[in-house]
Length: 337
Ligand code: ADP
Ligand code: MG
Image 1 (cartoon, rainbow, N blue to C red):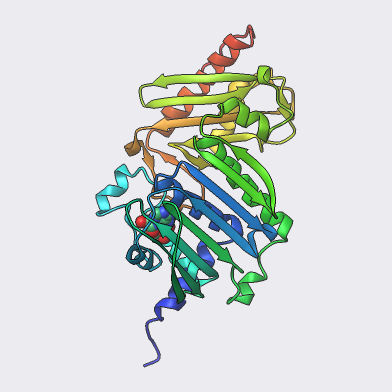
Image 2: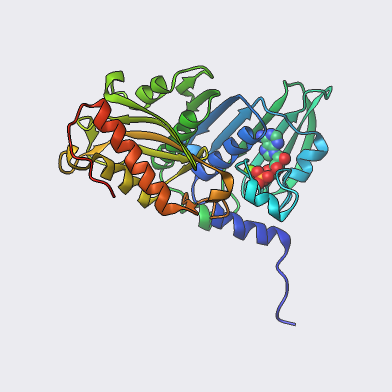
């Protein structure tokens, strides 16, 4: 018979190659797991842009030895039980693929301890195979170390970018979590502390740290409830702009999304207040009822589908516009869409 079913480890390796295009995917998946585990303290460390080492450590619920062994198998998750759960999901994960993929293509270790367990455990994997397990003394929570990503698929490893370019993407994704989560967060790159934030830090302090060229008075607060949900966050006044859109950051139900419509609606709300070729700053949290967004879009694509796309976009434009006109004392005719 020339047709045969692929062995599981090959299936996982192929899937991993599709899901993990750079080190930032690994960092993103691990941070999301920490948040899903209820952590309010996360430490992220990378070396060589994450190509030699990625460490994500949290103080979340932790796992028992048995749970750790299940967690690294393909399609194992604690986050949904049945298909319908997908429509009211409020965790980042639900596919049960990340740990299986990452362990298959790296030298990975997981150490974890649950609150009431007497001891924690650490398991070492090489290319998906468990090679060692030992007891460890640690606090409640989980620490995952990922070394030498794609070491066993040289053809894929070649496609990782330079350390500085991988590093930039990791920093970008870390910044999104810093903005969206109220937790203690530490980010260390090549042994150097890049960011350290605390749970109670103000949003504006975070924004100004990430964009040091901004001043507090450049920012306009948006805080509006509306029938389908709410829009909150900060946007810059029309004269505080930059030459690209990289400071326009949107979250839908706390997930970072990158979608054309949001960018264009955001800028259209400024309309003629903007100088040509200039782009305002914005960190906006759009919250809608879970059944109004499709979460089943591909997790890597950062897209979002609203079921009432037109209404939400129109309301967003009007809300931002009203705030801008009112708070910057622009006296303009409100052009409705
Ligand atoms: P998913 O997040 O889609 O469920 P993952 O492969 O990322 O799939 O994780 C598998 C399971 O391992 C999770 O459902 C969770 O139960 C457990 N897990 C992963 N990371 C952590 C963590 N940092 N703390 C506690 N449990 C974790
Ligand atoms: Mg996950």
